[in-house]
Length: 246
Image 1 (cartoon, one colour):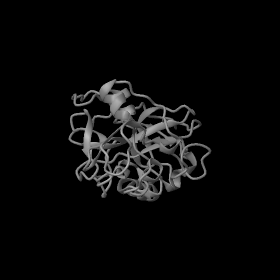
Image 2 (tube, helix red, strand yellow; image 1 turned 90 degrees about the vertical axis):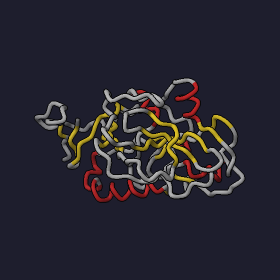
Image 3 (cartoon, one colour; image 1 turned 120 degrees about the horizontal axis):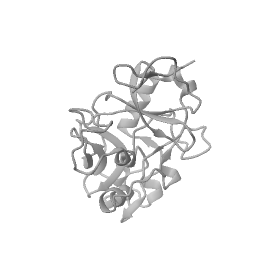
């Protein structure tokens, strides 16, 4: 457990650049992933133009999803003053294709379907630059974000102990009575895009419709590798590590 910016967080992992990825211990409330849902475009954390005839136009990073808008507002209200210790390490919303085209209303399975359902082989690598969400001044990724905040990926949940439709109340992402979104698309069934989430029993769920209204939101940020812990704290829920912010 980590105390930072007047909130309690959990450590997800050390990123490839040495930064520390944190997920908020509690949800900031329920939200749809995307209010719109009648096209492959809406599987994305950001998206292009529904009804397009190309993959690139469908999945361009032009429009913000409902959940991205919520997280941006939360960052403005809660983290903007702590920006000096928050780093842009990127967030992966993998829209690589497993089957079909990812265009319009074509039934499509995305990359995580193959990794986490067919093969049980999660990965940290974001396979497409277009799907690595980074801020506009970044030297990597899609440079589409205003603020360095996002969601956990389904692959990170799988590495932590989440298994598709198997209950697990004994790992750090389990949050009693709360289901929450990941950033990872799963499929478009011809009617509604479905994203990965974590269930109230800690299971990894592959079928959350993006317009579902009762799924929680747990922000994810990355702290600089040089971030220090102030004296005191032992990492427990009652006595978390406290991050030095100045």
